[in-house]
Length: 546
Image (spheres, rainbow, N blue to C red):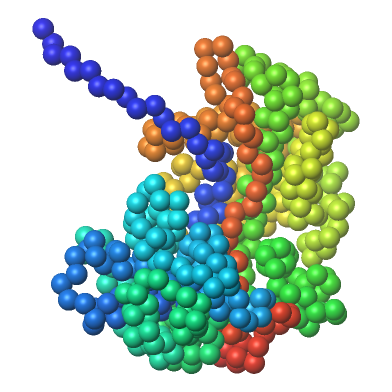
């Protein structure tokens, strides 16, 4: 007799999920290597000095705190920091960067508005850890520090990473704490924490805590400048990469401000500029040798982004068309036949019998200059067209347009193939890293130079849609189900064939930390806030970078 044990199996957690075909992860890895020390959620760098100051001040004021008591103080302090900044924004120019990216902003903003009516705000009501309290500002028990900043600050040597003892400042954190303390009143801050109930007048005494004050505090600002630009301290390989990428952003912002009319640096201009090495005018982007490796790295990232977006668009087309046709289909063979007849044949009616190689030969004479990114045939233009078409779709009538733009992107990239042995030269990956991600530059260029050349165009489009997108999605979804217990299937395999899920993933670019980096440069007083170009300090730092 064998003993039999029965266990309940929890159902998978159905989620919308991200990166349904695994094409974005290589892009995320690239920008992570290009711009370390910032993340997509470290929105204000004044938290880099506020947290060590807070932890050092707590050490000096309180003895033998339990971890639970430390957490309560930390949560109340984050609320107070945000409220001080929100109050400061009520009294000064709204366009100044007072409240952008504050931890707990969404919950605390209504509370700050009550102050204008002569009311009070109760810190403990918002800092509570009660999961049922509607006023609670943050779910993570360590607040925004735990959710957003702790890992990053630990990696930079500012805080300890031991969660069992709670966060502690260390190394550079001590210097940042002292510098932050130059312009703030520790007594006023902790008296406010202990008072718990605060009025607008009492918050006015804490204006020095507003993130906008960083640029006015030279000791604190200079330490952070050195951290991000390695002006006097070598912060290792990551520090040098961070310095190069941020310096490249300053250089591009400076060039854009000299256009006629002057242009402010945006993410789209940064993407297009680094990919094409040119300005909106078409003039070459002058890249100093100091930033050459960073510029090459960002071009690799943007090339990977274009490949990713093109495949996401193809995946969206096959799912959205299936939605219009009832959302069910028998299996992969039937899916191939259906997609060929219903989508590929109408979209490529005059070209379906020629080879991919012949298709490229026909397009070569029409390939726009790389710098002419506003040409309707340019891959940058096609990428923007995909995003617009998907956002404004009308009963599936845009499927041919989206599919055509996606394939045009891939064709342009194939025609611009430089023949590099390794498109990821300069980046570091584990040997097996790309085994998990089929859609990436190595596999793309390998196929462009190999099997795809002789493939009939119609066969290739079907292969990209079904094999590279749908089958790849099933593998990605199975992996997430296995390791994360998340059900992210957009098209579910059943005994009766494939069944479409309700929500379709639109094609999107990844977030390369540009917004956070630009905000950091503004907070440090290097980039003008309300007009294009650099400040005097920004020009000084750019000159020091070479």
